[in-house]
View 1: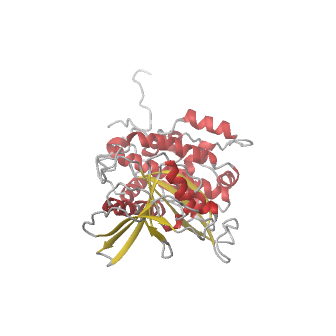
View 2: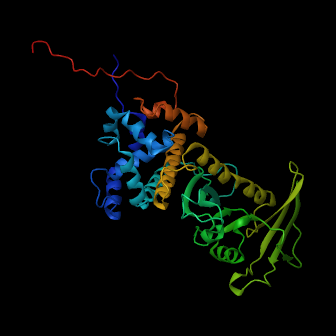
Length: 394
């Protein structure tokens, strides 16, 4: 019988996390203060199992782990937690531990992520920012203020288009405006940021232009601007209808909300929609068609939100407190990084939903993870005999 030389796929995924760094974060945050046996590592494994196994409740998490009792030692766990134990830990242990783990794993993913987006010739870093509403019941999630009779949380993200990795995340009440989070962000000079009209703020345009950060967004219907007099006509090619240098009309804005910089307006005819789109940017050198393509590329962050909501557990929650929701969110983002890492390492062109489905079905299979992601349909090795063979003569 063929011997098994590898742990389960789940245990090999967990090996990507440095246990020394994990323990250091726990000590720094005093995350296990007052704990009685149920460690932060046990909680972390339980919440990753929630996402990867598509567990719908605390009962499914605990019973799913309990049914694999003999394999938990490979995960660093002694036994499956009780529902009340896991619920209490999610409610009271700080979510900042999982935020730190997310950024630790992000650095690992960046090392093997594609260095350059092949769709564009420019060398600037391309980012997208956006936010997505997660609807919640206001009676159960009383902290999630959104509307008078509705509750919601809002997930704010920054997506790096080199590998399409989330490099920043923040969870707020649903009523928090997108621009409030954008004003707190800092980007390296030369970065190009694609964003929708929810982030239009003249003072933000002014600050980013001073810092050497470029932006591309669409104008609003009430956006007013003046064409720069005496400017040289730019050639209009293909579906480009307008390409002009402008200054924004800030007469009705407060002194600290004005933008006095020269900006650029580009109008593009979109044949598929039979409509004209107007973009505004502070990048005065890139081709007008490239400006339009950058905004179109911003759609990748919408697809990221779609993948996150469809494949991981962030639409329904196993806890109702703000802390529990934060933990479930950050562990979901950790899972998406794990899936991205597997895609980077694999020679197969995995679709994320297929990878999630097959990983869920093989989570406790004993095979080489790095061979499996290249050939998931190979015959798994047989398990070794559980009884020890007797030695002759004894």
